[in-house]
Amino acid sequence: MENSQNYYCTNCGKPMNKQAEFCTSCGVKQGKVINYCYNCGSTIEPNQEICLTCGVNPRKIKRTGAAGSAAAPVRAAGSSVVNPILATIIGLFIPGLPSLIWFGQKTKGIVMIIAFLLGIFIIPIAGPWIVAIFGAIDAYQLAGRVNNGETLDEWTFFWNK
Image 1 (tube, rainbow, N blue to C red):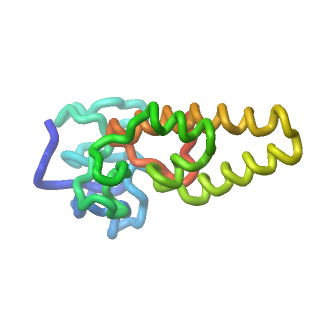
Image 2 (cartoon, rainbow, N blue to C red):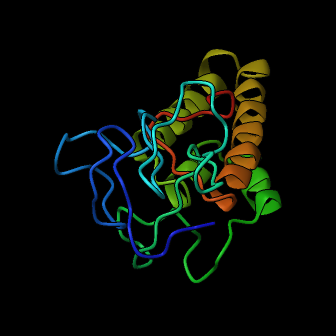
């Protein structure tokens, strides 16, 4: 059961602000290291998929915060979810744009757009299609993960867990 009052650092287990992305006690980004349950503070083993004390999945941190804040899960403006089909279509035609718009991955998005443009000039037929298909798959998978409450790092791709 989700705890609405307290929040604990997943690295050191100390109480912290629910909106914080980084622990002020140890400085580790939440979800990067999972030693403790964010919901109840219980110890979590490396392969443990559910907290035995409170029942939440310790690898899916759900933050509450103002829309657009750095600690809040990334969402489409004015929406509660990212539409995976729309993200896929945009990712197919302009790879990297969904990363810029919805996933808060500015550097990754810019690199993917540059790779797409370079592909047009270096390998005119196959290059852009390879990057475009990759961008569409990445956009679809990451939209689903964001909709499930996961937070994404700057360089999270669809194959990262």
